[in-house]
Length: 247
Image (tube, rainbow, N blue to C red):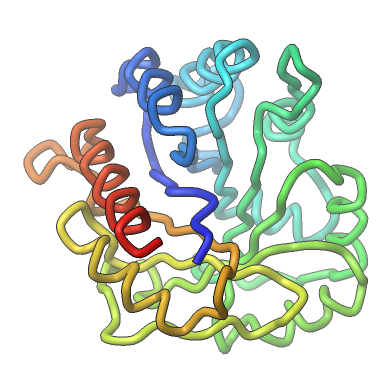
């Protein structure tokens, strides 16, 4: 297993920007993902202003930032439309020319609304941003959509969330399902169990397979329910230690 990213999801405006930058600089494998949807991330809202500040700071601080797109904005992207607020972030570049947002996850699984998935229009968006890695959730329910996207001959990656957002780790993890598209793993990962789960994930992967892991709910403080940078650091450290041990 080649672990490319250790993703920490759902930091918000109550977190200190300097703390996120410090973690990212000390742990180059760490990635920090903002949850983007119009009810909390529209222009001038606190979360948008906070992340905009972090994104601008990252133009000169080489840390890994990602965006997870949800709800109505997810639906718009699946129709081939990019809302202004997130397009502005995708277009932002570092001083070295690289995109500030290196990866975008479009959460096509979940949510209350039904929506159409236009593979040809989604593929046009992917082609318009060749330096951004696009990620889509893989489930049995979403399989046919992703097969249609695969036929468009565009690069994309998939996230296998074993718990469907419930924060539960499985006894076993699923092997990659599409040979041309990288798969990452999420589901109940925490500082306490990430090492054991990396062992289990490694068992279903080909030797040297490039992948990543993503944690969210169990990085939050149990009392405040807010993203906790100390728990995030423990999760990152424990993942790195296990990868180093298995090399």
